[in-house]
Picture 1 (spheres, rainbow, N blue to C red):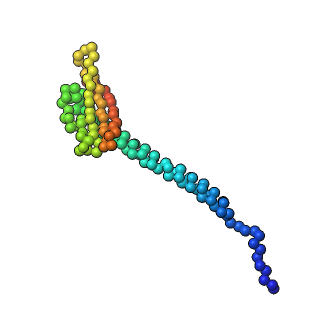
Picture 2: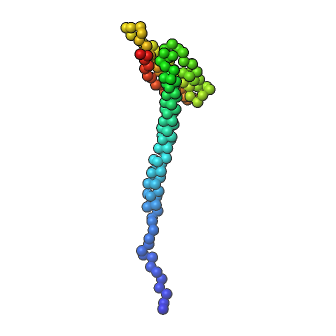
Length: 133
């Protein structure tokens, strides 16, 4: 039986152009996904800071609520509770009060603003009103 050489007319595989197009599409997809990572990390950091600020503000408001509106009105609340120095803690807290007097002098409405400051200089403020009936 004589040896018959296989024919090479039907070749299978990818051409160089097809491989380059596939790599270009893959590269575009990877670059777009990787471009989102810094933004998502920044958003996660911002969310963490806002959560920390809300927790600290809630802590201060809890202390004010526990001691009562009279203690706030007559400045009997310990200043270390209402103000935390940013150099000694992860975040700083500054609480200010503003008294509103209506037509009657017995009105004890106060606006309490709690400002939480972060090491990078950004701040988050929360305000509420406290009234002593």
